[in-house]
Image 1: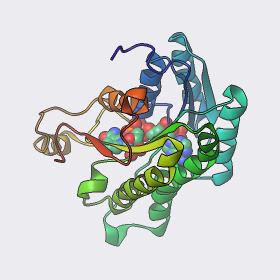
Image 2 (image 1 turned 90 degrees about the vertical axis):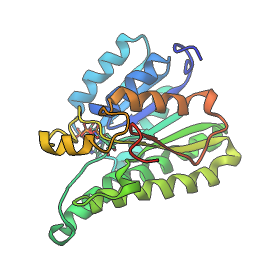
Image 3 (image 1 turned 135 degrees about the vertical axis):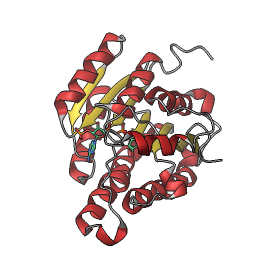
Image 4 (image 1 turned 60 degrees about the vertical axis):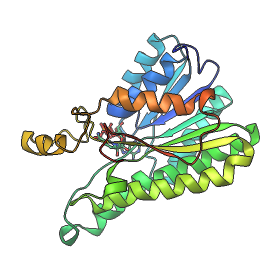
Length: 251
Ligand code: NAP
């Protein structure tokens, strides 16, 4: 597979593309030739990424959007379609954590995590699904987590949202297969170089490292390569799958 140009002529949207894993995914899709839109609640960082994408020679868009809000997610997809006329690749990457033990977890923290991580993907898939069905082609890639498969003490809300994404994606894969649309999950392991895990102390990191057979933490780029593959024509026969990019944590 040649690296450059495999996604030339395609358009992509990466939610939460303003930093961390989402930014790496956006850059990787652009490196493969796709035009890439990114969204985040804070649009300034998304605009910076759009500049980086344009520097790779593709078209780029940055939009403010809170994907947990149905109207904002709808407007986001509409904006991409209005600008480029098509959306080939949707990457639902926007996600948050609100960690606490179950007995201390507030209803608000439960709802916030479910609304962004799970309902956000529902909102964007529903809005983008129509145009993909019409086009009779599309790629949906939802970013889950190994925590959705293994569970994690202190992350019941997050783990539920990420496990939910797996069932959601497999259902979409079945519904949309006849329209030549694939839907897959990428489940990263520990990717410490991002905002999400920024608060882990050295001791917690060390303990997690003992669970990684490949003996190193993941890089945002490790996740991005997997997403780019699933977005490509080479992955046409792969749907409804959960691909762990985790150094072997889950096997
Ligand atoms: P991050 O650095 O905190 O970035 C999260 C991104 O999502 C930001 O661009 C953020 O921008 C955006 N976002 C958050 N809430 C949003 C909302 N409601 N609407 C739109 N955008 C929103 O996180 P990350 O570590 O890169 O994680 C990215 C994804 O990978 C998440 O789904 C996460 O669960 C998953 N993951 C991460 C790890 C890890 O170790 N880092 C492991 C497994 C899975 P704004 O704040 O401006 O909205």
